[in-house]
Image (cartoon, rainbow, N blue to C red; front, side, top):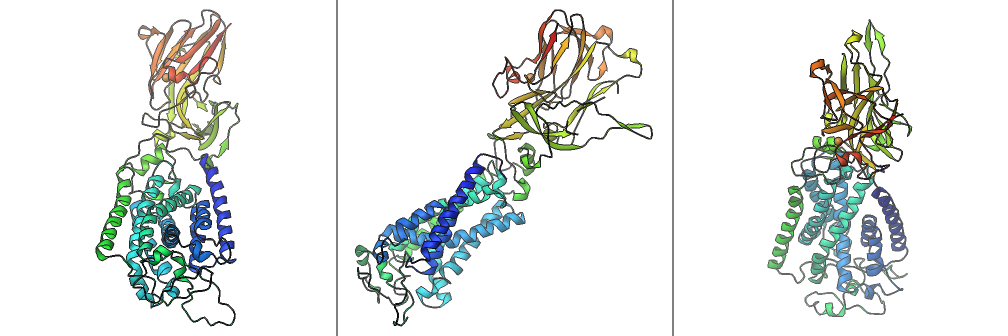
Length: 583
Ligand SMILES: [Cu+2]
């Protein structure tokens, strides 16, 4: 789903990654002289790391000119790249498969992480190391599993120590679409996680290659015609080693120094590897330290995000920027505060459409029935600002005696905040009980949070404070202008259909008389003059104002932030403001 600007960036990234992967695959199988397992290693890692995988391939592994692969790949840093590629290709594949499956199953994030670790380690050890490398290393499958275990354990710990916090913090952060494998951002997070994991695993791999307990890069050339393929299939494996590395070669029987001419070298199986120069205390210390890094990488994000939630709990929610996320924030709270999903819009209102339509009832057994249907619509609060709003019958007004309103009681902090309310104006049976005025105008107040491209329910909560304010769904200068003549009276019905704020509503051009509060008419003796009423959430005030002099008289909220549109004034104001134009 495209919802935020970076979704376009991610699409561009995936195109780059696909192009990079296609190039590496083509080049590997068109003559880069190395074992098939390493060809696939580079292809998979380029798929995950895009142009960065391609860069590693051309800088460290791609044979620059015929016959030079052995020499070209000999520096230790390149051998370290090869070793890390091999680890990441196996481990990351296992991790990504596990992440996809656990997300689709709706398992909580902390279980995801453990399953990912087990899957990554298993895939790397049992398949990528032991199975695919058996041909090169010689020996039985289980011998290979045993020999590969410790280097794979160290490398996997280091990689997951980088990948786990990247995934946790980004997936459980603001944009929780990242928990959903059907969203671009999930795959973006996976890509970034692999890159971070590659970086954290690299230094450990360099050390292990140097100590000859892990493979670096190898060269494998096709057999020349007529020569028997008598060896393990791995050619010139010693070609990977530079001269200074050769000084460490004592004790590795069966290995020979590579000839620079590209003349093929063969080594006898197994002699090059495992057991190397590393001592048991060194390996034990590395195993301990990488285990500590791994556990830290899994646990520390849990201090700031809720790892107990699953992809289903958060339902792809995008949280308002600046919202405070905590390790105990429930998924229900997140969904209430989340942006309205643009793809759920069922109706797009015309930019100049007005709400507050009087709803015509149908009569059923002598009872008036009002049909209201709630849905999500796109609604312009200003000509250039549209919000995704919840609306009844695309949004309107109906009419006990007095001024009331109806609103949603299902998740009201979300549904009412996003528009599920309407005025209920009820005429008394005895018309003489009505406080009369020449004109009647209803003012429903609302707050909105529109950031970037998304609409959030505004709340008195960190990160959820409103930046747009509307009267009957429109912000000034798109609010109504009411035409009056000097001497006329108007009944203004203020309704606190808003959820969070008290709006001190003020009328210019002389005081008004407060004639009804919360739907009940005041006795004549109780009516009073004022020029401002504090309209809190749910409150109603009916006031009668007399047009005394010609002019454009403002009705507005007295809180300056509420008479601006995203903190900007247009035509001298914004938000909760409308004009009484008296001639
Ligand atoms: Cu206000």
